[in-house]
Image (cartoon, rainbow, N blue to C red):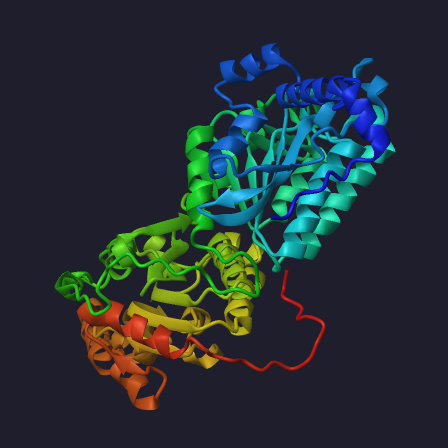
Length: 535
């Protein structure tokens, strides 16, 4: 039988015999340093975080990742100028960085530690974040940032600003290569907001996280207005008004669970397809209730989420930007086990009209799906673009063009179902065949026309209406005549602009079959650096 040779040298063996090996002092020092790094700013400051209903940086990572899957980067790294922190050198320099798994899939992660110098970003701190981002791009994994920082470390001066710039450059270079997710779990101010704003999805926590370029004190000194951090840049502001944040949750725990849920819909990088998850929902399942979803009254509202939930596997839908521009619904679901991106007008809010915010919201989502090989399903019930000087002066031409550009540019499988109204320019913009949709179906309730029946009747039969003894009755008669003659899906189907008019109950099966057919779709584009989307 073979024997295992001891690789030690004679001197090492002699030292071991003398009791000098292994070097116990070094082992004890290593353990002490690791313990110190794990505690960050100390037990008292961690308890302060808990008192604010916030988790520590390490607790957040432990909750987000699979159990015992974290492998840290640079655990013992510290800033070169420890004296700048008041004479103390902090191991890990206020940020935990590394990689781990979520449901068995690798992700790279960093988590800022507010207990260490307020989570402020300096040179070493930035290097740890950049290492996670660099590895994510090299390996092809999502990168998740848990932000809880007061901003740049003032003591490090211009080095802190340079450190932020290095992170911003990596955000841009990783865009469209790996999914980037930012979780705002505390303050995020000044230049620090620009990194999350360039990532794909931003999460915030109610009443404990906020984002702004200039804080309340600066606002007060410059424009003499008293405003709280929550009113200026809290979660409710950024999820309902500015659109900066995509998700808001009541606390850290629920936020981290939602991040895990989002990851399950996404591919790890732009070279992969989204993961397949079999929810054991029959592919040919029909829903007779959909035959009665659209009201008989064309002006009556209904909830588009009823249709969305009906067609998706397991009725599972992860809505994105749920509280912003609610007249357009976007989010992720599964059809036949594969991830799809849903874009749908919402008749229950502003009749599903497209306005500035809805156009930008939709364009951003479409471009993300196209970057990461996620097929697009568009459910249309749109009366047009929002009229009025507020929208025009706000740039609805420019913003509407963003959505038009995003759909036209998208090379992933694109399927549209017109449910009810599809009028004017909005018909073209909402992923019509004219801008490259692969399949376009319509329900028998679809109304496809340049104008709605009333508007069209007022233009076409203007003289007859004005000369009538009862203009109102004549208008109603002509409106109904126009509706029956022109406002239906069959004319568009005859022209080949609609691939088929389908029964509502069969929508799920037709979509799944179309996605199967389009699975290996290949699109050839002219060579260019990039297009010039109307930003």
